[in-house]
Image (cartoon, rainbow, N blue to C red; front, side, top):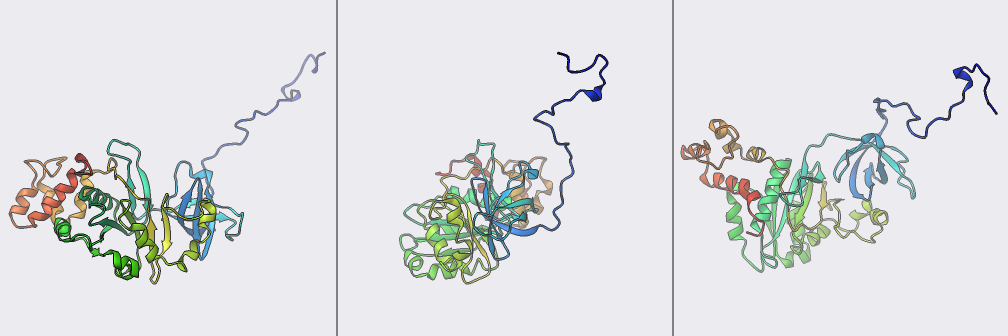
Length: 336
């Protein structure tokens, strides 16, 4: 039986809307001018734990941000339920511009770079002088990542009761990197934490180190239990019972104004993302001498103008050696 007359009009025919594309698309995004400011403390399976004023708030990323991801240390804008109460969820609607970024790749052939920490002022490279043996090439790689990302490096040498730090300090002496030397007794009684804390006050410091060097022990000493109350229910969010450094976690520095970002232990530090031309910016005494370099100079070739610059007495030869050692670290394995 016919449902419509012989001469039907388009308005007489009812159509069922499709399941897709039922909403009009627009490029206009809400400004969320009333959004609250917060800091990302940790990220776990799509959920971000943020500090908003003095409250710890669980949040998720808004769809309008697309593929842009927030990481530990990011300054973000949040809307929704910001009470921090159980079973509440806020929404991150904006990620503010970053002042620095610490990146790494799985290896030097991996095209995918991973942002470890954002907006950190300093990178503390924790290295044992023995048990395990120091790995200078891994230190070099961390230094390159710090210089490339806009972070100031700090060397923290542990277990000086087992080996002397002199040889390692001599290797990095020309770089004028601040350092702290500690031993096991100082780590146990808190003396090491006090000396390291002097370099951390008022700053956001990311800690990186190989497994077994004492990084987690030092971080725990810097962030006593009473300060962990600020991030007390982070463990309830992850469901792990305790933070085992499987993801980065920002913690307030005990006894001073500052933040400590504990990162997972590293076995390697890929630098596939690093443009070698940016590393020279960390050497202002040498950078001026590159004006006479040929185009796309690697700063380690016969026509490099830095050789003449140093020969004329404008910079210490040890500084040029250190620069070239860092620039060539991508061509060497980290265990060399």
